[in-house]
Image: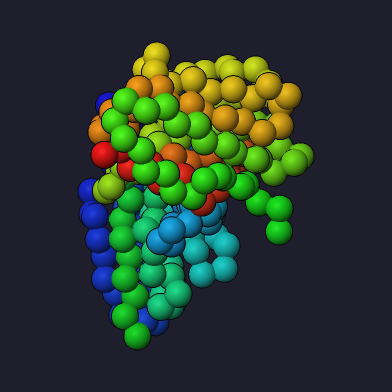
Length: 111
Length: 114
């Protein structure tokens, strides 16, 4: 059962523009969400997180928005840089340790 | 940088053979996780340890799979009688005991079963 869905397998944006990566979830028990970034031949690295009691969290160029009623979250990267090109995974957490991942979105930032 | 270390990075084996992977977590992390990732998918949870206790196992973890963390430090994941469907990237992650602490992943072990 896919509790976290990333429906766009890929996204291409121009350097300097905004990248918006989307994620939908079905499990209403998730109380925390995270975004991970993955480069080829490396494990995923933590990027940014948000608690279910918040609707926005910002860290530099990265902002995550959460819409609980729609069971939707998004990651905004602005301005996008070529080094941001990677696969981005959305994950939901419940019971403090049960983490479920989406299938990922490959972001390409063109110079 | 003492991140999560996994060995080997790659393993090619013939169907029916047994394989064992090792994970060394970040030293102060008491939680350790094993995930499996196949092409085009996100990491899928396999099992989770808190210290030496295995607290949760996914139904994906058939009886051919066994994981241990005998002293609450490194962990091993063994797959017996490998099948071609076991070919995947096996990822280990660790975290500290804080609420909703992010997982720190290793670079994985890529298993190819021929």
